[in-house]
Length: 376
Image (cartoon, rainbow, N blue to C red; front, side, top):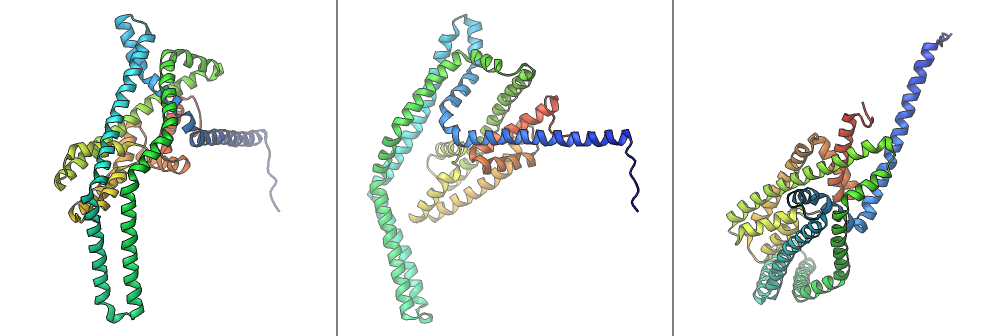
């Protein structure tokens, strides 16, 4: 027979507390899961639409301290300094992008319009096809005549198709680039104008915008929201500092590699590749991999092998250093940083790799400050 349990007031109270704790945990879990789901949807589907305004808010927040310092020193209107600094920032950024883009365009046009490059590629492809044909002929004793003919026709067909592709690429790359630029230019121009105008207005009225937003927050949550905003700003700047450090490390690695390989303008090219590496979606492979295959096609096996080894070393070191450097800057454990970077990548793409560690860091600091209670 089972013993009868004694339901004393104490045991009933303890059971009720356990049930209450579990219920609170489930409510908190559901609440933060809904917030996370909304955040993922916004970041994944609405972020590109909101990008000009998000960038404008970043510019406005970044310029508040220098504007405040200038106003205190000169007693000139904040509106004037807001317009001047935003315009200077835009001109500097636009000039940098224009110089890099123009040099890149000139390099591509020079390469594709040089007939010597086409002839060299033809010679390389024909040489590779001839080598495969000789290999097939040597082993023809072990193959039937039909198999030998099929292999040779296949090799000739691949080399012909490859040459046709290269010829079309060289002939149409300028036209394709011009078409792509012409098609996307109107929207880019509109987005650029909206970004500049929004940056000016937000820089002038930054405090009013922040005050208006804070007024919409219930008073009991106002302090938590303000702390969250401050933590987000600080964490994002620390994250940017971490990626600037990674970009510098990549630049040093590339400079050494290019110098050893005898690449002309090694420092300039290393700086450009390091700049591309820090951009979302892109990376060193965006430049090094096509460059290596071009070197292979042109018969420069030393450069092909050197670029391949460089890419492998940079990729390995980046995967080792990135979690550590980012974790040191934002104060997260490297394993936790790596986990949430991967989770963000799978959830919303490259942007998630930057966003998720920031969210986790802010939640940890809010937990430590006692503003929220998510875990023990």
